[in-house]
Amino acid sequence: MTAKAHLDTSIVGMQRQGTGNVAGETPATATGTVALPKCALGIVILGAGASSRMGRAKLLLRWGATSVIGHLLRRWRTLGARQIAVVCRPGDTALAKELDRRRFPARQRIENPRPERGMFSSIVCAANWDGWDDALTAWVIVLGDQPHLSPATLRALLEFHRRQPQAICQPAYGGRRRHPVILPRAAFGELRLSPAASLKDFLQRTTIPIIECPIDDSSLTLDLDWPQDYARLLPQTKRTGHERRELG
Image 1 (cartoon, rainbow, N blue to C red):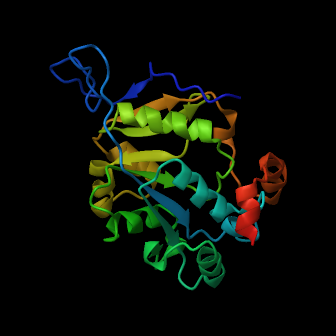
Image 2: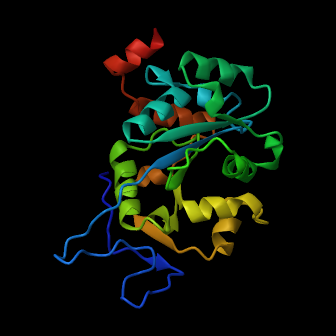
């Protein structure tokens, strides 16, 4: 299905400014056109999970002519990410070797010392990492189990974020919030000392506005969790000349 973002979004917990604009919304110029700000995106790829349901490391699964992690790195570079970091488990030599093969710098890898605490612990580790570019304006929390999301869907979400740069933006499909989540600088900083137990808990606690971005793409409901998920999603991958060169 096509990824169609409806800009007449449902707005959660929003406060309105005296000007009539929604808090965090990009205001119109005097001519009536919207001046969209430039966004400098940081990408957090969560790679510290145990992949216990899959039975093997998800990020190392073949995806087209590359691996899942190779695909995610290339996809977000293509989408214009300013900086990408991967959160890893201690001693994950297989992932380290694959990242080396992809020429992904060791200095852009964040170690989660206690990955058994779950996904949110990796997000908090990323928020506390001191290697982020000071110029970044927002961070995308990228799950390792969604390599199938199309460029059109991700571009729709990024474009939506550019119109609401101060708000937390989350895609929605079928009346439910989905992933990936985009966190503006204020929200990413709030994560550092958050008492929340999960990302869902954090989003419920924060006072920063959250805006749902409805996108007409049922693939937002899918996850790469089980072997049968991989078998179902793998035919969607396409080999390109660039991917074939990467295999080298």
